[in-house]
Amino acid sequence: MLQKPHDTSRCPETAGRAMDLELSDHAGYLRPCFTFGIIADVQYMDQDDNSNYQKTRTRYYRHGLDLLRSAIDEWNKEPVPSFILQLGDIIDGFNAQQLTSHLSLQTVLGEIEKSKAPFHHVWGNHEFYNFSRDYLKTSKLCTKQLEDETVPSLRHDGEDFYAYHFSPFPKFRFVIIDTYDLSVLGRETAKEKYQYSLKILKEKNQNEDLDDSDFPEIQFVQFNGGLSQEQLSWLNKVLTYSDENHEKVVVASHVPIHPQATDSAGYAWNYSAILSILHSHTCVVCCLSGHDHDGGYFLDSHEIHHIILEGIIETPPGSHAFGTMHVFEDRMILNGRGRTFSRVISY
Image 1 (cartoon, rainbow, N blue to C red):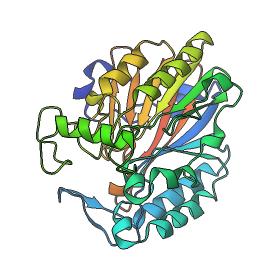
Image 2: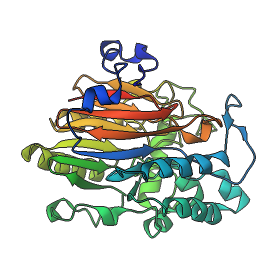
Image 3: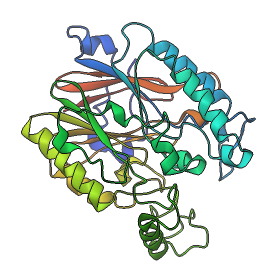
């Protein structure tokens, strides 16, 4: 059954949109244009369960691999989705301290290689706790080779950010953006973007611990990041193309874009600049992200659905946290598993 959205106080005007319906009631008369899988924040590590940084939640490090494996097993059943969106933090940052980053990455990639559907990887803060940006560019977590190459004018090969677009079906386009383009994570300290990002962070965050969000602009912590002006300009260019070609666009990131989709400090540094770009185009229908392990949802003033997927890392045995999106011409239906809420996304 489709479940009602949690915490509808964030979006009271949309509380009735995620109706308690069987998926077949909504879609049985019409096949979807395509389907795709979604999963976030696996944060695998070969370590016993432990608490989060605030000592308020349990993190199930080893169990995440079992949940990733079972999600892939389900997606591998017919009909296989067109692709899978992995929304970042595939292994945990504590791997770096234990010198197990490469081993843990090899372990999760071994499971991903069993998938019949291609994975599109988003980079999160835990990728950068483990690896440099230069390393990630040459790793299997870089899936930019899956970019739509039929529109060469939209390439950005000279720019130092990990973002690309692809079209799995006519009139639909997905745009993966890099919410750590502006960040103090993953870049060499001598790099200009690192210095610029550190300057912004310290101007906004006066705390000794730059992960402490006890100040007004709570998003300016080092576990978040933002988009450079170069990436914003590229994003605007892609969305202009989609407007002109009457496409519907889904934007995927690790860090959430809209602050009202989350109850935490985990949203993009320059979210207002990103939203300004998204709102200046008619093509954007949905933003998908991870980062906040509780998940979240908000329908904004421009009818863009902001969905934060619940994190695998804080999903206990006996439950799950992934979904399959069924895409139609006028709506998407998220069929959630376990902690992931099912919902109807009209556009």
